[in-house]
Structures are given as structure tokens and as C-alpha cells.
Length: 146
Figure 1 (cartoon, rainbow, N blue to C red):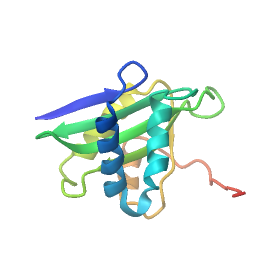
Figure 2 (cartoon, one colour):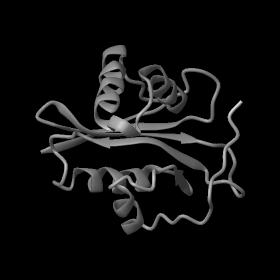
Figure 3 (tube, rainbow, N blue to C red):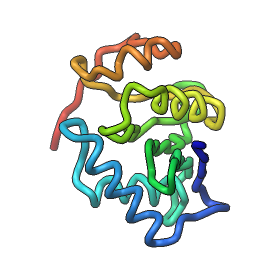
């Protein structure tokens, strides 16, 4: 049976739980991921470890192992930018194709208050799943790195 665990400002993870989520995301995001310190910072933002708008981190657990995880940060920009940004989402690379990612994305949508934005590479196979849930690509994002 798959259990859902949600971490937020009111229900913060222990250091070992947070470390486990960071390691899981780092290992399973593969080429779409970031360094561990950036993943940890997004989780800290979601649970308001420092001044932020908050959000949540959710994990799906089966047989006492994380099978999927998501980090959602609130943007504080209701009305002109989506209220939430889905920063990281991953399914255990050894358990893909079993509907776990679909279940996590559905729970994420249900738990997020307001609209959700996410960045996804054009070649990411998960893009099709996002589109099935109603995510669209209305803009081309441009960035200036300084």
C-alpha cells in the first residue's frame, strides 16, 4: 500500500527525512536535476525554514521506501503569475510506469492552493503526463543569466 506524507510549515520533516528526500530527488531526477544543496533549499523554502511564502513537499512511500516525491513552492504572486511553482517531481527510476507519478501529480494538484507552473525540458518524457493533467505551454521562457 502506498502512503502519502506531506511536509510543510506545520509538519516539518526531521533532518533524516529531509536528507532522504534530497537524496531521492538527486538520484531520480537524473539529467533533469540540480545539485543537492539546491534541492535542499527548495525543500527548506516549502517548509518555511527561512522567510518565504512556503509550499509543501510530498512523498509517496511504499514498503518503507520513497517511491515518488514533489516539492512545490508558493510564489506569492497570485493573479499575474501562478501561485505555485512545482520545483521538483520524480518517481523512483526502478518503479516507473506503475502509475505512481500519476498519483503523485494528482495529489499535488489537489493539495496546491491556486494555479501551478512548472518548467519541463521539451524532451522530458514526463511532459506528456503533465499535458494529460491540463498543463499547457502558453509561453516561451527566456532567461538572462548573470
